[in-house]
Image 1 (cartoon, rainbow, N blue to C red):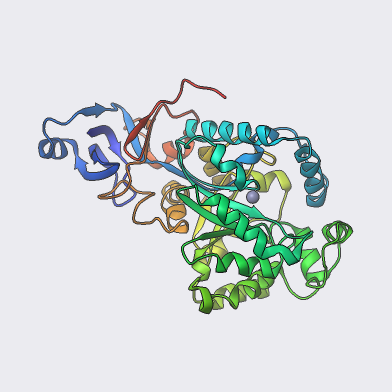
Image 2: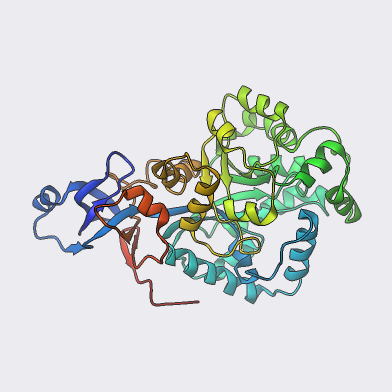
Length: 413
Ligand SMILES: [Zn+2]
């Protein structure tokens, strides 16, 4: 099949005017100017998208579809700790059926906004089997917390891996240094060199206070639920994370480059020096609108970028955001970083997250042998292309995942 569009945004060179893509077996087999591509594959079905831009499908590098049903349920709280207590309260009202409905609703919404790949953390990997084959390419990460049972890290990881095995792509997510023990981080790394890894790190001032200074509201709360606080007062969240993951690579073949680390808002000068010294670096996911909801310290994008960290965007969950729309996420990022070019911002939901998921040869671009994951948006020829992409404020009405056309725009959750 051949897909023609006014512009094909390959992200592997300049956009192609009057472009076309030939697709076979779920992959791109040719990309170029329409006359040349169509001459090479005459007789093939042609889909003409007209005055639209064909984009690589968008990749959401961090979200929790479990909590799609919590949209608007948690008003802004005085502190991060209060928010954790509020979400725990909301979660206590939900059944497994509610979570399944919430995840399905999240998939439908993400698709409407042009997402074709999603890195989804779930606290309930045992429910994955009950989710009908998702129409999005999904990396299922089992989110694991061992704060109440630090001795059970092995068991928790084994059981998560058992549940995850039914998913085509999966990974492990020890939640954060304030809820996951060093042992749990290490067991997750030992689960296999092919397993992707993600975590939350240095998100809030309270996390910094708890781990570095052994004080503050998060410290008091975690202590009250029985967490062993012996690791507090010794180092920053980043130092604890690096310490937890430093010992394992020789045994497991893992490197820091396999970690996708969400947030990284709170870094000290010594943390920046530590990042500078690292020979391999982890990937970072920033969630601009969730960040704004919490009022965290300014995300140090420029410094992280200068230090060579690959930064992607994600929506996080709807317990701290209003939609699963990555275009809105790009605009929120642009408001804080107005001198970053729209094209570079678009890389943060295509090329960069593909690299974070170690799919840089398959996803995030429209190129030879890449997966045929696309989305089309209306586009006018006389305005700056990437500015129009970042400004796109609608729902996509045409998309393809793995070479299969997706019927969207008709169903609302
Ligand atoms: Zn998160």
